[in-house]
Amino acid sequence: MSQDNFQTGRINRIAGPVVGATGLDEIRLHNMVLVGEEKLVGEVIRLNAKQITIQVYEETSGLRIGEPISDTGEPLVVQLGPGLMGQIFDGLQRPLATLAAKEGAFLKRGISEPSLPTEKKWNFSPNVKIGDDVYPGMIIGIIPETESIDHRVMVPMGISGKIKEIRSGELTVKEYVALVETPEGKTEKILLVHNWPVRKPRPFNRRLDFNEPLVTGKRVIDLFFPIPKGSSAIIPGGFGTGKTVIQQSLARWSDVDIVVYVGCGERGNEMAEVLNDLPKLEDRTSGIPLINRTVLIANTSNMPVAAREASIYMGITIAEYYRDMGYDVLMLADSTSRWGEALREVSSRLEEIPGEEGYPAYLASRLAEFYERAGHVSCLGSGSALDTTRTKRDGSISLVGAVSPPGGDFSDPITQSSMRITGVFWALDYDLSRRRHFPAINWTKSFSLIDLSQWYSEHVADDFPYLMKSALSILGREHELQQVVQLIGQDALSDMEREILLTARILREDLLQQSGIQVTDVFCTLEKSYWMMKAIMHFHEASQNAMQNNVRLDDLENAVVLQKIARMKELPLESAVDKIKFMINEIDTELTRMQDNLERTNV
Image 1 (cartoon, rainbow, N blue to C red):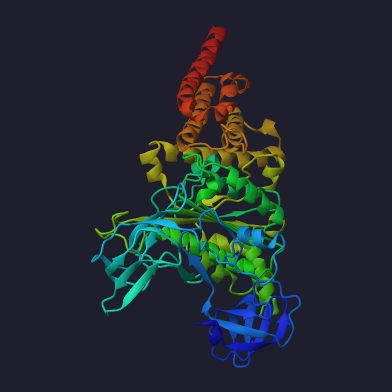
Image 2: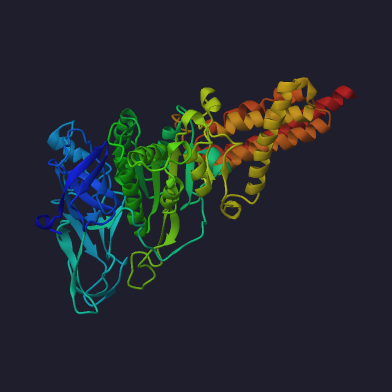
């Protein structure tokens, strides 16, 4: 719809970010509108016979009754094309770095700038020729978007037919790359860029099973509570438990191609730290700056609350776009609680009947709608012999949402609703963080509902599932014994039970606790994690056998090999496995020597 044909109404009600208007009889639900003389961006969220209701994504102070409202004729859309990687957007996909360069550090209301660079030329290499059949989702060419990411240009939805013209070389996003003759005889242009409504999930062929874990480099996650590629997880925790640090660590170390990081309602200094650090960090495998495969969406706590919802949907739509190219994408939402608070504020302005703790009754359905857009899928347009880039390509979106329950109370409605939807729950513990145990993931409250034991057995070791279950059993048994100790005292425990406490302490301090800054421990491969766990569990089994042969617990607690176990995390990745295997032999040697000394003493 051209600007001359905009339907125009007038403001008749202002309540914070919620504005009422009349005179827009033909407008549709979720259409975007321009509000007031400054043309603030808003979205229609309610219609009735008398007026429409709009949530405004910018600050509404200074608006007056009677100011004009114009219908754009389109819903909230995201512009998809080359140039997304490395960008920093706000919740409306305005490029913040570009705006800051033009307007300064303090941005005015109503300003806009093209989301993608319009003058930059991209080197397009086609992989189809004139006369080829194309259809929606099919890859017709490649653009090297960054050093680490190839942008795979796809046929947009609604276009199919035969290639009439295909171009190559240096092109801008304003130019077409191909002309397609449809079965009806029409000629359609395929551009490098297209728009997509953020509330509408992008289509795919079908969902695929979860078949491999997302390796994060964090032992407590990879060993005990793994998230499969394409699944969803939540990280609930109170203030100071390390939600943002874990998410930033996931962004840097996870085994994915693309990262989409959404700072939804987070403090400005935290987002500033992310924006400053990411360009300096390097990908662990390629050494290329991490920003080259990252899209950042910044919607800080001092920005209008309504825009938090836009930023969440903006992020998941961009993630779906790269998933459709066949990439594995990690989307981090920090935090969904701030989005829930925005829903509650807008709902109260609309005078809706409140649900639990004042949240709207549709909170659970909104969260489900969001998390259901994660998945491991067969991409649309794949499977053709013409699709030379990746025949039968599949992609995934792994979605991790931080939750900030008030006071760390997991009975909070957002936490409970998210738990019912997601498959993985990483519960952060304030007591662990206070004791400087990071990541502060509580192993008795966390869970992963997806069984990946077969993958671990095939790709890591046959006994991996057994060791994992045994280690978790010991940690759970420790929790029970600690309650007995608090009531009666440690003297009430047998030596065998005290040995379980010893093994649990080693598991906690030497396996689950992990440095966020030490070079050799900030990232841990699955292989090293497995052998660390195996060494500890071997010590436990050998100790139990030695104690049956009358070896004292005090001798086990003073074993020299325990000092080496405590320093396993400091071993370099390239030599860690061989040294841990040797250490397992040392465990047997030292405990055997204890038994021999005991026998000689008795003689």
